Amino acid sequence: MLIDIGVNLSSARFAKDVPDVLENAQKADVAKMILTGTSVEDSRSVIGLCETYANDFPSMLYATAGIHPHSAETFNANAQRDLQDMVSHPSVVAVGETGLDFYRNLASEEAQQRSFEAHLEIAINAKLPLFLHERNAAVRQIEILHTYRDLFTDAVIHCFTSDRKTLYKYLDMDLHIGITGWICDERRGRDLQELVADIPLNRLMIETDSPYLIPRNMAFSPKNNRNEPAFLPWVAEGISAHRPESKQQIVADTGITAQRFFRL
Ligand SMILES: [Zn+2]
Image 1 (cartoon, rainbow, N blue to C red):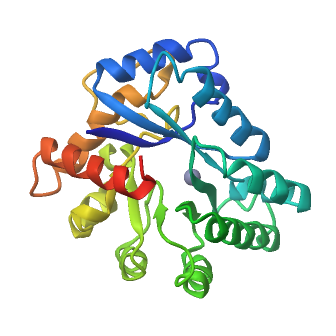
Image 2 (cartoon, protein in one colour):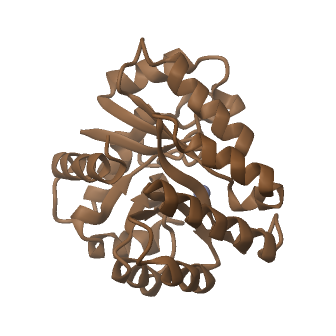
């Protein structure tokens, strides 16, 4: 079963045609998707989208609630309370997006760590898995995760693009790995292509991170230069080109893993 674990459906680039995007996904056999919440306001938006389309697209949409590291400066006591309330909503299946991004440092490192640790606490209390982002911050992120590892249930490093050493540290902590169309980029994705076979199949999940990261192995150029959940099969295709399993097997197993991980 095709499950897209990372869709930014609240993006302005989807605002005009959400029903078409969902229909396209359905036609491409994408059965379920997890909508990423990147701020308090945005988490509210994606929960709203789950509610709005629950009748027309039953059991298709789920959400995460969290604050992206880029927006970590917006984390405060009010935000914490809002997130705590949101995670009890039936559509919310994970806490995040959270984590550390020391590549762009759009928020101070202190603010990012404070927000990240608060998200860990929220996930632990709610017994929900974590949807994690990390860029150029693996050492600190792993240190923090180690501190809490016995307490939280599960976590996925979404859009993993790091190196083998980091991958093994995440796997040693029993984390899951999300792979996007990054792997389909013959130039930028080369490192990832070389290590994707090292990920145990039962720890692997797939995502488009749409509207970003159009899979470059696609046979056509999408309109508006926009990625969509409907293009998820190309991510599976890109992964299967560098693993022993067939595309069908990747789809089947990542679907089972996502259902188990997010308890869908
Ligand atoms: Zn991210």
